[in-house]
Image (cartoon, rainbow, N blue to C red; front, side):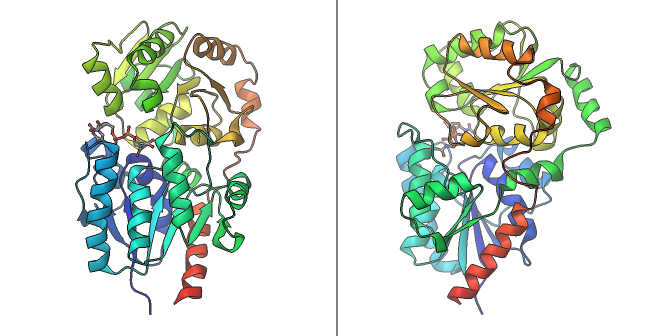
Length: 364
Ligand code: UD1
């Protein structure tokens, strides 16, 4: 009889995307939080939103440089996995925590399951690209959200028997926590905005916010948009702005502290447009049928380009593309409603658990 499963997670999006898997498991897993995100508003409130217990096991790797973070996480996970001896370890995505988990599980010969495997931006400047490649190649089971992700993995000669296509668990998370219309309107009232009369924006990618000049350009572009902009500020962006005397509040931009997932979904489902550099948001807009200006050099989510998302570089194309979307180009809000999400129907958590159970039967 295999022992308990372990789930390792460290950042806000990992909680969102692993919650549907954790909830679909037949018994509660051992939960290990690496502490990469440590502010309560980036961690604790997200566990509570999904009705999950706070993890019993914690490592403290927040606030370190990337190398230190990965090193500390591998070393601490090595000890913890040796002690807990889980039947398999489950981790998600492309963060430093994810990559460290794959290395640590591999070093202890504990089977590794990677949720949201196979994404590729082919952009070697992104730490996430390195993280996801390492995690995929060290994983014994790769749960790919789409056929595109499957093709990326097989192109790198990862054997097909190690891969299962499941859809993306973000769809389950959105459908599970999207508040009803009345609750959504209360959130809008709280922020003093009208449905479809505001833009929702988030920025945190190193490529955008670690360079003060680029960050300033983004702020100026957001400030010039025709609608009011709600900008929940990520800790990384806050730190860089403070260190470089950049005022994030420009024109019609309204700054918010990071909001919990339910409130975020309320704002997302009622906004006119999203402008930002988040990976997960590119998926969430396809579920809630919103347009998004993706401000990045590359994306690992090509499935939504040309439909829900347009990819632009930092500069005048931000307001250019935003203006076109607000004028109904290339798609109106009504047209987006009829486009299905390429990330599935909301059963990815269940399909992931079924794939994990089949996998465990082959090894135990
Ligand atoms: C990380 C992930 C990124 C993911 C993002 C989601 C990597 C390489 N990057 O980026 O893929 O999209 O999480 O948010 O793993 N900080 C706080 N409080 C917190 C968390 C962070 O103040 O709760 C500060 C840290 O001290 C650090 C900065 O914010 O200075 C960045 O945090 P870090 O976890 O290194 O990376 P993210 O930018 O959040």
